[in-house]
Image 1 (cartoon, rainbow over the protein chains, first blue to last red):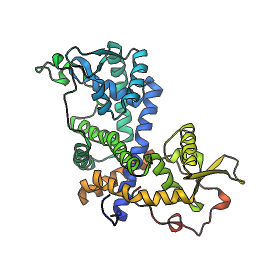
Image 2 (cartoon, helix red, strand yellow):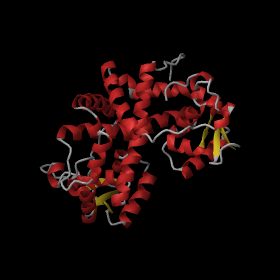
Image 3 (tube, one colour):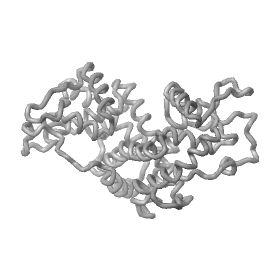
Image 4 (tube, rainbow over the protein chains, first blue to last red):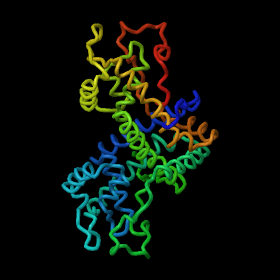
Length: 180
Length: 180
């Protein structure tokens, strides 16, 4: 952006970039169609249920949830209202943290996540993972780890401090909703 | 989706999938922030300008544009209204095709695309392409070509038939807005 002469992509890089942006454009709608059809969930709904299920006490500060799912706070707020109406989450204030409300996974939300996870993992296999060879998956994993770490905002604790049990690893608390 | 027993991802595949979905979640907003800040364009705006610039006569049927940019027709229609107000595109009906209106790139749209392209290519380099080695880029390109071809709807002509000049390759008509 600061150079006078733009550094255009080579033809090879242009091709690679176009394949990546095509997948970025097409994969989430495909995964979402299958989640919607079978479980009435958007992909963001699913990602939020996963985020909540993986944190101790099954809750995450709303501002951190917005960051984790790359949504504006106002968009997330609308989504929370919808998910709350569906009984999937509740909202509560944290007594030791004035920075706002927390989203909490309900029993119903956990039940829906467990029901949807097999659909989602099958979609992820059918439309992405099973289309790659083991060698390709390894290289893609390495390359995208670098990219994701570059893009990720610097981490902050995402749980209400008084409720974090350091002896409880996030994964130990619930069955793994493998697939995202 | 049809099997009784879900085929959960292995730990290795789960890791790869999470890196991919993290990039899918984080990269477009990052690219969009930089386009918005410097040129007032959303990423969808930019992608639409590129699509139009690469087709003969700089026009594409709206239904095909919705498909190409993976937006609902109603969402695209709102976007078209906004882009039309900004003078970037116009809409017109095709006399030989009753299937609806076409979007047409304006001179102003072409000017804005040419101005924004260096910003966008720098963003794509900084946040993705330059973070990968040549070997990684090659493997990612091969793997994502397979995935994109799998996800892509079967092709149909995207231009108003009477206006397609078969001697004019799409790229010959305009400077390459490299970068997407």
